Length: 198
Image 1 (cartoon, rainbow, N blue to C red):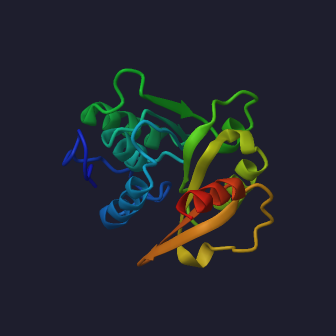
Image 2: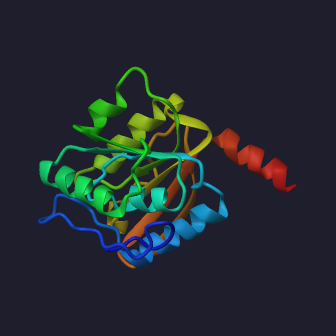
């Protein structure tokens, strides 16, 4: 794994031993950030990397100019690797990164959270955690800015297109081999985008 672009381009990233994290392949990460850059969803924006793992996604965002990234991770080994990756790339300096060790769902339930422009959800596979996380975010629309979005990374067989969402809609999905990326936002954000393009 490595940082693909930006101020830390080419810097290697350490991985976490075992299967407690869901690493993102460079090919998928490159495609994801190409989409997000076309949306102007990175530079100057505030991100939440909810199941931080190695930090590969949030670190890429910081390298490409994200204003700040909060990483939430409960696995002690992953937290250690994440910290090492932030130090070795140097992208989290100046208060641009914060690592919160603990349970993602407890963190989402905190009473006061400054809204994020993008929340990235990539929990361990086959534990129904992505559904639980998305429903928790859907239940608290104040977690997202007005045009904020949630990106979910899953193995395709985990997909559940019938989740009972109230405040979020899936507006796009892309598949790269054994990885599916799903994009969610508020219906009002889609309506505003449609008005802007018409």
